[in-house]
Image (cartoon, rainbow, N blue to C red; front, side):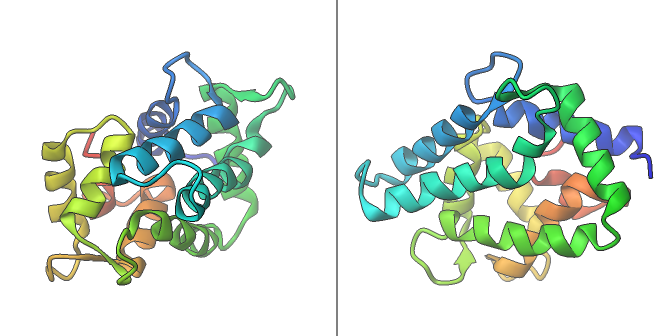
Length: 182
């Protein structure tokens, strides 16, 4: 199953957000740095148990969603490799959206700073700032992603929106705003 140009555009936006050092490729190191940036923005002590959990979750994200796309085994994933990997995965996985939602619920825990099971605008904004977005971008995205309008993004809302961002053809959709819009 081929992915559309619309989905490829969303994937490219996310890809370049993950390229933390902006060298044109995504590596495990980019994910480690992103996790460390989340730690810094949350004001956690580097090396603490909570900080290490966040960094390891980001490393796990590399393992689950990028490492398999390293077609030539050089430790880095180009945009072309990433798009081919996602296209192959979506085409071979009949429950791709369900699988992605389950995996993205784990990412939620690295953002839920106070552990209350929901993301405030502040928590969500800190997370997006690690990816180079501004507080204004986060505020706008939050307004779309808070599907029930209760002022928080629940674990289910987060996982659904993040997963649909990567593979959904639906538009307009709240998920289009996950990384601040396009």
